[in-house]
Length: 80
Image (cartoon, rainbow, N blue to C red):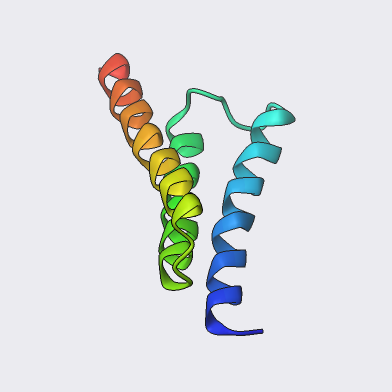
């Protein structure tokens, strides 16, 4: 496996862990941990997509990360 494969796999794994934990009601869909995992995973996957110059996934994962940041901000504001 190359560096890109390893880093990309870690990013995707984090996203899948967030999805799994949410699907089995271990974490809340609108909870901070869910958003945080998505931000980290999508950002790593976006970075890897950039490294391999695959623009469609840069856009997809970048959007996923940005939307998760917005969700995290909204979640933090509603908790205060």
